[in-house]
Image (cartoon, rainbow, N blue to C red):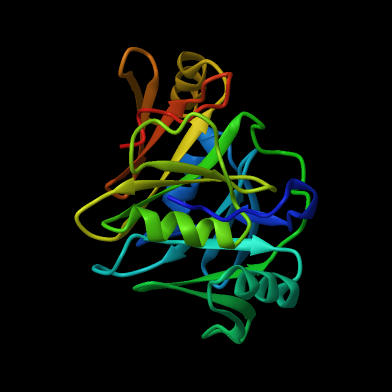
Amino acid sequence: MLIPTHEPGEQLMLRVHPLLHTPDPGQLGAGLVALGLAPASQVGGRLVLDAGGGRITLCPSGSGGEPVTLEFEVGDLNVFAQRTRASGTPAEVVNDPDGVAKVQVSAPSLSFHAGLGERQLPAGPDPALTVVTIWRTPDTAGAAEVLGNIGARVRAGTPAAGAVDFLAKNGGVVAVRQGPRQGFEVVFEYAGDLAVLGERVAAADVTGRVTGGDRQLTVELGAGQQVRVVERPMDDHGVEAWR
């Protein structure tokens, strides 16, 4: 499988920034803050939270619809769109429904957006916590090609055939995994002791349990939602738990 990637010296600013759709962003946000994320902004009911690597936005939503939307942040919309097109994936600058300029990337059977973002996030979130968007799809080769075309780089030690982890230069991971249908999930990696993280969560009156041989922490965030946190190996290899 050929995965095009930009040379390291030519990498553009890129950050993983998925959208989580929830009926109660405030309650979900409180649980994520207890986990170690830091509030960055709140506009029109949307709550932006920063992690040590990557960021997420909590969006108010009703029942139905996909719970997670794939999205990224870049430093220059026009340059990003031009480089993505030159790599072989259609991309153009458009206005979203709120009138905000973003790049629309048109992958096979999927379109996603990249908006403007700061190159460096403010200090505040737990630096050991990284946002991971799991991209489940029947076409793992197509997803991997698109991620390479937008400037993400393959992480060493991919755990299994057909599964590829991609790192964004300015924070966050996208883990491509085989699935019967296309969909996304937000999870976290933690470069530290999950038992200590669990104690911190418990001290904030948020329910969490460590499982999987002390390598996975499941945190109940309220509003019927939970999030998984998996220990990140010191060698930065792919994590078997992302299945």
